Image (spheres, helix red, strand yellow):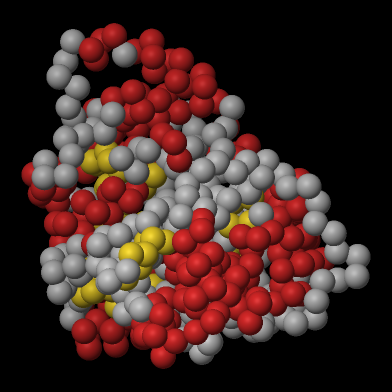
Length: 478
């Protein structure tokens, strides 16, 4: 990500844009404007970023200066870009759902997040938490490690999964992303290398870059994790840390077996490389098959585990946690004061109530997600038959292989069809994945059918076949 107020070169902007172009001059200017707005909405072109001159862009992009001028004029009209004679052009404001400066658009279908709505039991847990609040109001309210009761129920959850854990091994955080940022601060500094899967969670990559560390990708294979590739990367680059998502990996949905975990941890232990394991999706198995043991069961103090209630219960709770050795927990707590002083008490009380007997709620959630996954699979087979994917055993999204490297083009066009998508290159360290697209199935069946129907129209248009004869965009779903 570029720093706010920095300047992006023409060559760098061309790389960020990827395969955005779809057609001739008329389409080209609209597509270029949409592609730039996508970069702004994703945060890859922060507000204040200075743009290259039109001449520099003409040299960097395979289009005419007329197309570039028309696209920038459109962005100026919408207030997204501002220009001043002698001072150049810069990003003036964030892009809203409607394409201009941030503003509401209830007709947009957002497929950028694998984030379900809250389940009905959350309201009751909030009522129970509110009843407990008075006893906490007399205290200072700061709990650097988290409320003891919550730490204990989280520890009990690990123990039930075959990993004996005490409350002293738990630090409560404000979500898994906060947990990752805290852990990075402890283990890695400027210039340090961090091994990551490719593809992987974009916000995890941004956290590595924000710490001035260097993400080093190890490609996922069709079978998942290549232990030999990790051994080679460990030997060649000497990373300070590794980051893995072994449970329904985001975005591929792959699940690392117990045998694979044992082998991979053995390779990391041999290289004395700590590994951070993101278990955000671990509770979302959609089959009756038993889950593998947690990676920490094979790695001891080498493994730091991150967890979260955002996917299993609700992202709005913003409660996550870290499981580590008591020594690492002590160091994390000391480091935390430079970032924040604890997670809000009320949200912790809510999650404590939810985790007292979590299985009934989780069982219902899994049934809902499995049904929505099947709807998405059926809709993709109908509307995008040229795409391929594996049906995951868990998680919240389908990782689709497109029939051509057009992921960015599809994401750009989607904005004009009431959809928001994350283009494939966002999941890669240095670009690539242009032939990949993640389709979450966290929306209702009705919305999923509508969204994937629109995707089929877009895919047909990008492929150059035009709209299907019977294609008709329905009234956008709120």
